[in-house]
Image 1 (tube, rainbow, N blue to C red):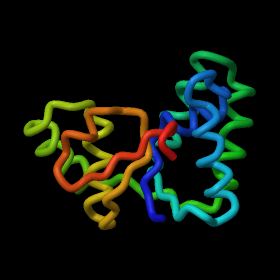
Image 2 (cartoon, rainbow, N blue to C red; image 1 turned 120 degrees about the horizontal axis):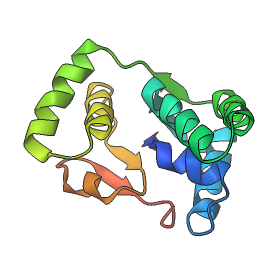
Image 3 (cartoon, rainbow, N blue to C red; image 1 turned 180 degrees about the vertical axis):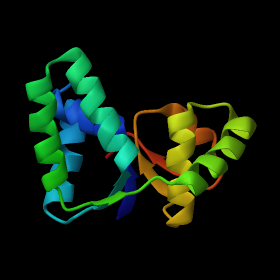
Image 4 (tube, rainbow, N blue to C red; image 1 turned 45 degrees about the vertical axis):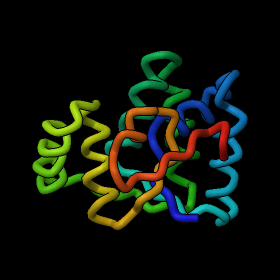
Length: 135
């Protein structure tokens, strides 16, 4: 399977979240073993580090970054063209702007599946959403 991995999956895995950690860790293992062709963005990686640092510590954030960057997945760049496209998506759907950026990157790379716990992706035409519990 080929999928975009949202920030919350990495955060749940790093923090062994009591409700979503198990599924998120399984996703990370499948990426590690090459069973899941995974994509994310540099913005997602930054978001993961920021959230973990805010709720835990800088050291924990650094450890999470090392593990995350060691995974065999493609970290896609975010450019001006994605921000412009995200503005249009944001205007139409009124969802979190970061998520609009992720949709713009997914669209450019023809990725139609996202693994996330965010339900608002379900309202976007052409995007298949897989929740960590369903994985």
